[in-house]
Amino acid sequence: MNEPFPWPLDQARAFLRSHGLPEGPLTEISGQAWVNWVFLVGESHVLRINRITVETDDAYTERVAVPAVRKAGIRTPELVVFDDSRSVIDSVVTVYEQVEGRALGRLPWRLEGLREVYTELGVEIARIQQRVTEVDDPHGWLDEETVSDLGELVPEALESGKIEAVTAAWLEDWASRLDPAGASRGLMVFAHQDFHSFNLLVSGEPMRLNSVIDWGDAGWADASCDFCSAPVWAVPWMIEGYEAEGGVVDEAFVGRILTEAVGTLLDWEDHPGKEPWAPQVSSFWANLVRLMAMDLDSRWSPWLPDFLPGVA
Image (tube, rainbow, N blue to C red; front, side, top):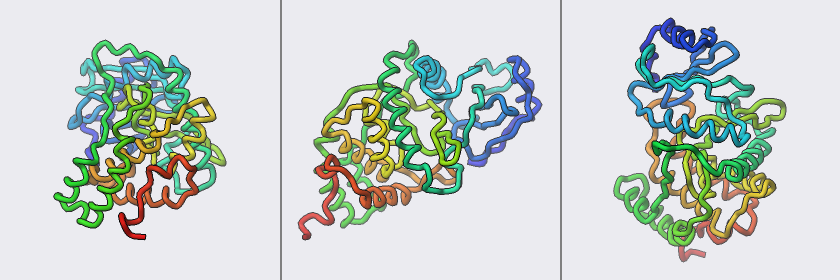
């Protein structure tokens, strides 16, 4: 969404000045987020101004989530200012500290260090689940968990023309195999719920995970939830780090992840713009293909699909 910033930059500088913060130089990070206009403020802060055409829910979620995860020692930038007064800029505005690293999704595709980054992400997920046990949320600003219903999504995708009959039959068979996992629930934990590659800050050679950002979808959810927003081919590496840090993988854990992977590709609507963070439906299919090509441990076998039902 290439929606131009509607205020003079002097107004953004005036906002920073009103909070006693450096005024710049301001460098817009174009195409970084659907919800906000994002500016680097010199080398010290990140200014985020909620887009006029987008709800402000995410900003309020972050207002309660970020202090809780920071208190727990999770690697994420400090929320320096939350301002919904609209006194200088007619929007909800937040300012974060600027930390080392670049978004993984903005880097050229390369394999070196990729496994390590996602293994470290698994470690961080375990730490979040173990350390963040309460969040001060008197207004109910944290997000609720959503769970995919493949029994509804498969026929809807067939009716809308997203898939044809042979694919629908194959997915219905796979969905029936995944049913027990989808019906089960694991431990409820605090979850980020949006670990796509633009929310992972990395640096170094080879790449290492520095911090995670954007807590606008955070809330209480099943323990497998934070594995569902990352590329599904990265999940085996994430589980490796998760278990090394004491995370517990129950017998239906990967089944719930696969249920959400299928649900996402059926429910996803391709974004009309060309923002680098917005995957297309074809990306989710490609991610599943890459997962199937991996050497997976025995926990995956009960939840993976047949080639074609009834065909040897």
